Structure formats: structure tokens, C-alpha cells
Image (cartoon, rainbow, N blue to C red; front, side, top):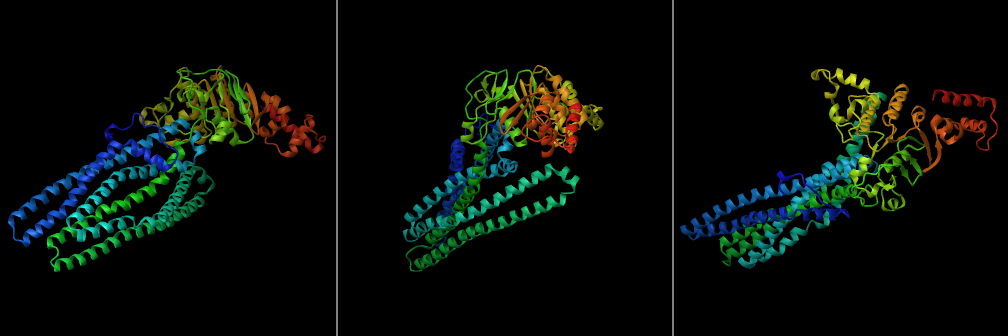
Length: 618
């Protein structure tokens, strides 16, 4: 695999049982690149290892005053220099290729998982963790994959050099051969503590990243309430915790580096002292001493790869574990089994008993917003996380077909879920509305139904370079140049353009005023006539526009009807919709004969009047 061939046509099916298994899977899928890097690394390392021999020959030739041997040694040094240059160049190219291709594979896997899970991803994994995995963690994983082949080449070169020195000059070669394993493994007792400190640093950095992401996303709100300094102080404290953790981690790695310098230094001093003694006694030649000393000195370079691979693994292991945590998420408990099927019909959730008849506008009222979000995700085919939960939660049915038994693209075409906080990507308005769709709903019709007239006017005024065409006006990242209500209505128009078989909206009008909300509710009902629409809401204006209203209480459907009837007869529904107090609820229950409560006192009458007023306004 070359960089020019990216992206992968298929990044593969990763092993997500654990972080180390995921790293092994990555290395195995890049076996060809690893072997290339290993081959060039061996050429590079062994060419360097040959230099001490030629230097020793040159020194001995000078001592023996042999011009022929000196010329031969010089020629060998030149040849080895060329091999070192070629090997180093190609090693760098292949190693960086391994790094980039491994990182690209992980990024493609994450992108595929994000597309599979959709808005459910950030409900299951913190947004800061997703950001950390897709940026810094990807680089650390690629670093380990890249360092693996260079470490293998260095380890092989060390074994070859030690064996060669033992045969070349046993008196000094055995000393070097016995010392090398000690030097290579001396840092192992320090690695667990260094790894723990590095994990602590990454954990604190992830929290700081998440805090910064949340602060940037809510910057306009913070400015509105004067909370910039409060969150600035929080981020300052979080960043200082990251700095202190980084310093503590750096101290351990500095200690490991010091050990890697101290022990080889002791070896070289001992080697020179003992070798000089042998040369003085005439037991070895000066050239032999120079050869062994030069070899031992150059062996410190491949020895550094042991420290690097230890660092790369300690940093990449938790990064791989975080990637596995994301990649192991699934949209459902089962694999897709029904091919070529785009189901139609009633949308039914067996877990709650919620039924959305085909072709009708169904409004759902939940007292718990989190419960509403989870139910909306489930209607889109996203089961709860965790094996036990997935087994206990049956799949949502569309026309009697389980959504988790059909391919993902078919499920997405059949049911579209608009999250409570939809995101607008940067680009022009035309690009925003160019989404996969049935083609039956035009962009103009969707914008009209979502009451985006003021948004178009604002975009037209901002499009001086585009002849006042709002469709060609660029929308900034996440639509930050627009108000919350404008962003919400543009996102609604985008969902309406797709024209899915079933459209699920989670609080689609929570950021608009009551007059606009009434028009948006009427626009949705008109445009989606004959199509299945489910809206999670608690606004009387939207509920009154629905064909039927369903009340979900504690995970179960407890009442079905229209808005006005439920308002009169169902106290739990009335409590959610009118936001009434406990005293008001007791008074209303008594008047309507609901529950065993005493008759209302005179001071309870205003509460009853407020209910009547609500009905009239609805």
C-alpha cells in the first residue's frame, strides 16, 4: 500500500477485543510494508555495523605502513557510506509510509463508524474522547506501527553484531555480547510507572479538550450571561493539571533516557580500560581494539530503538484502547440479514409500545428529555449499548420488518432521525440542501415549510458577491453566523428535503418563538401529508397540529389521543405540557374527577381557568 493509493477501498474489519489486539491487527494488515521497512532497516544497520571493521583495517594498515590495505579500507568505507545513505533514505520512506497508511486506516474506520452510528455516537462516547481518538490517538497508533519495523531491524542488527564480535575477538566481543541484553532490558522496571504517568496525562488532556470543545460550542451563550471568565478559569485550571501531569511524565522518560546514556557509558569506559590493557600486553592489535570500540559505540544507535518502541507502545496502547471503545460500538444487536428490502408501513417500538401509523403525524410527549433522546435514537435503528441491554431491547419495526435486520443504507433511507441539536456543515446553502433524497420534495418547498424566509433574506443581504442569491451564500462552520432558531429551521428544511419513509424529529421547534412555531408545525403537517412523521415535543402548538399524540411515561406508552382530549383527561400529560405545579395538578385532577383528591378550594379556581385558557390558545 502506497500513500498515493489512499484511501483504502475497504479498511477491513478490525479486531476490537482489546487495544493490543487492535495494534496487532494493524501490523498484520501492513505486513508487506513492514517487511519492506525491515529489509531497508537491516541494510542501513548492517552497513553501519560494517564501518568499524573497515576503520580498524585502515588503522592497522597505517600502523603496518601498508598502502594497498589502506586504499582497500578506504574503498570499503566509501561503499558502506553509499549503502548507509541508500538504506537510511529508503527506511525513512517506507517507515513514514507505514505510519501514514496505518493512521489513514484508523481514520477511515472511525469515519465509517461515525457514519454508522450518526448522532447516537456522541450519546455513547464523550465528544472530547471522539476528538482525541480522531486526532492525537491516530498519530500515536501510527507511530507504533512505524516504529515496529525499525525496532525489528535494530534488534536483528544487534544480534548479528554481538555474534560477529564474539567470533572476531572473543576477549572483548563476549564482554560486549553479555552487556547488550542488560543495556536493552535495563529500562523495563521503569516502564510501568512511566506508562501510568503517561496515561494520567492523556486522561487529563482529554478532559481539557472536552472542556474547550464545550466552551467553544457555547461561547455565544457564555457571552450572553457573562460567563467567559468562569469558564476561562475552569480551562486554565484544567490546562495547568495537564501541564503538571506532563512534567511528571517527562521526568520518568528523562530518567529512562538517563539510564540509556549512563549504562552504555559505563560499558564503553570498561571496554576501553580492558582493551587498552590487552593491547599494552600485546594480546590484541590496536586495530582490533579500534574495531571493537567503534562497533560498541555504533551499537548505541540501534539500542535507542528499544527505548523508542517502549515509548511508542506505552503511548499507543491506551490510544488503541480508546479507538477500540469507539469501533466496538454497534447500531444494533444483530447483523443485517434482509437484503434488498426498503420496508414501508407503521413504525412500532416493542420496548415502549409506541406506534406511529403510516402516513400520520404523530407527536410524542416524554417527561424526561433524556428518555426522549434515547427513544428517538431507537426509532432510527440504534439499540442501547452493552450486550445485555442489546439483548433485552427488541428492534424497532417498520412495516413489520426489524430495522436491525436490514442493511444500514436501507435503514437510513427508510427512517431519518433529526437530533435535538443538529449540526450545519460549512458550505453554501445549496450544498447544505444537496442531500440524498427521494426527489419529491424541492428545496424551496422544504424551506417554505420550515419558515426560513427570514433566513433567506439574511443570507441574501450577506451575499453581495453572489448577486443576492441566498443559495450561493456560504454558511460558516456549524452555522455560527446564524441564530439558534435559524440554524434549527435550516436543519429541519434539510431533513424535509430528504423525504424519508419515516421522519423522526426531536424538539424541532425548541429554539423559535410561538408564532413561528405554529407556522412551522402547520408546514410540517402539510408537507409530510401521507408520510410517517414522529415529533418529540411538549409544545401545545406543535402537539395540536399532530394527527395523534402519544404520552410515554417511565419508558411505556400510557395514553394515546389528540392534544385537547389528553389535556382534559390525562393529568400526567397536562403536567408535562402546561408545566403546572403540584397544587395546580391536584386541583385540576379534582375538578375532572381524576384521582382520589379533595374538591378544590376557592384559591384553586385560577388554576382551572388557566387550563381552559391553554385549551383556547391551542
